[in-house]
Structures are given as C-alpha cells and as structure tokens.
Image (cartoon, rainbow, N blue to C red):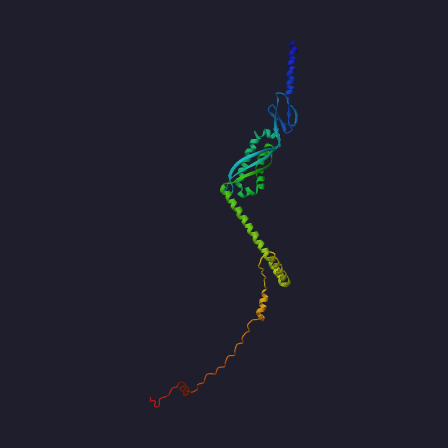
Length: 293
C-alpha cells in the first residue's frame, strides 16, 4: 500500500515536470535556450518548444521592428547656430542569439548610440542642411548607428529627423530672408514681363511700319474700344504726316509769304587821290604866307 502511494506520487511529479518542460514561442518571437547557463546555437522557432526540466531555461527575443523616439538633443551647428533636434529610429533584431548574449539590453544600447550619433550629426552640419537637406543627414545618421549595432545582431532600417527647433532671433532672420527672396522673385518676374511686352510691341511696330493699312485698322479698333465706354468725349488721333502735309503745301486761308525786296545799290565811296581834294572836302584852307622854317 505504501509502495503504491509512493509510486503514484512519483508519477504525478513526473507528469507535472513533463508538462512543465513545454513552452510556447509566439510568431513574433524567437527562443534562445540556455542549458546549464550555456546558450544553444539552435534557435527555437514559433510553436511548441520542449525543454529539459530544471536543466534548460528559455529566453524569448522579439524580432518585430521597433520604433524608438530619440530624445531631443541640443547642439551647435557648424555655422554656430544653437538648435534642438529630435529624431526617430526604426530597427529590428536580425540575430536573436547575439542580441541575447552580446549586449545586456539592446534597446537601451541602441537608444544611447542614437543620441550620441544625433549630436555628432548636428555638430558636423550647417543650419541649411538641417532644414532642407535631411535625406543625406538621415542616411549618415543611420550609418553611424548601424555600425556598432551590427555587432549586437541589430539591423537599423532607417532613421528620420523629425523636428528642428530654432531660437526666436534665428526664426525672424529666416523669415526676413524668405521675404526678401520672394520680393526678388516678384521683381524679376515683373521685369521679365515688361521685357517680353516691349519685345512684342517692337515687333508689332515693325509690322505696322511695313504695312500702313495695319496701322489704320488698329486706329479704327481703338476708336471702337473707346466708343464702347459710353463717354461723351471721343478722341481721334491724327497722324503727324497730315500736319506735315499742310505745313509743306499750305492750306486754304494761310497767309501768303512776302517776297523780300531787293537791296538798294549804294554808291561807292569817293576816291581821294590828292591832298587838295582832301582839303576841299574837309573845308580846310591853307594860310597865304607860311613862314619858312
């Protein structure tokens, strides 16, 4: 009787121990078996995994893609601008055995590497690169994080810079720069429009110069457009050639031109050839008796 009780008790312990050696590995996990503290190379796939009771210990590793936000890091760019940058990293466990053995906590390790790499990227980049050239910075940041993570069995899928916070003074400077750039573009567009309009007008004037009838048709079209405004005054442009015609030929009622009179012929001045004639003209008389010297 006592022997049967002991045998039943041992059988119950064996059954419980046998059922206790079964473990369930989920689809998103991989199992690492430690036998007497030594990791086995065989990775337990999803499903039922049998373990030797008291001897084996199972550690499950998640192989899903992990989305890890990188805390905001403050740094100074290469052009001496203080900024605050935060990012997000996407990674997954590629080698469960190395992730369970090589590093104590791979999540914490990847987070610290991401923070230091982000600070390094900030110091090596300029402000314009952080604002407009993020694709290259994301690739460089992912490469910096992936280099040490490969030794831990971690694969970095991608790293994205989420936000760049600027000081208020720098925000105002960027706003003024953008406003000046828009003003420059507006002036260039206006000048280009004026240039094209002037070129078209020059082409039109050349065509009208070779075809006088086109000028008359344009004149009539202008008159029609002015008359459509229902105004009481209608302005009729008069070609300058008409005024020149009347000025050249003389119109009716124009005063006749007076012919200049011929200049009267004046007598030539008398020719004085002798001293007596000069004395006679001047009315001078010589003294009768001139004393001898």
